[in-house]
Length: 218
Ligand code: ADP
Ligand code: 5GP
Figure (cartoon, rainbow, N blue to C red):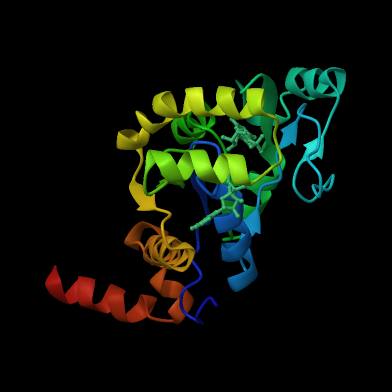
């Protein structure tokens, strides 16, 4: 849970990218259940819902026509075609939440991560989640039993290209033990919340003391 003196004056986005099946959704669910102050950016997608997925909770499931309308209205901060479907991040949610000092989690692909970072260089933190081995990625994707074998094959064939982008992220977290991966991302979020650029001493009533020290040092 967020401590009394941990809320930043400037909110930020935490992007979590990973090859399909590495455990992004699982990790995000756990992060959000453990820290109720975190916000989750629900993406729009033209992909059909999987069993158990709910519109407005996991994604906003849209037709291609609805998606294009939003694209043309510039409702997305970024959008990309991933594994044969379109995905887009609503712009207003991130802007509203970060301006209130909140931390927003985005589970988006490598192309989306690059464009959000370019648009919000000082208020974006990027985390690349990797599986502990290629074998475990194959097993997780297959055992999830949510996609047919052609979709699994296609997602696995995209994984090396996605993994090659890990070097451009701020942090790399290995999702071997789920608890450990979640703890590492929580540590990242805590450190980023108390980054000097996001702090304001006047909020603690220490501004006058700092100004007086400044005058003495002149
Ligand atoms: P993604 O969102 O990255 O595509 P999921 O969160 O759907 O991946 O996870 C893929 C599968 O791997 C799921 O069946 C999930 O339960 C399992 N999984 C996730 N994290 C772990 C972990 N640390 N250890 C073992 N299995 C995991
Ligand atoms: P899935 O279909 O497994 O839910 O997601 C497939 C891929 O699309 C994942 O890499 C996921 O992170 C990515 N994705 C989900 N939402 C968005 C989004 O809004 N924008 C972008 N660029 N990628 C997204």
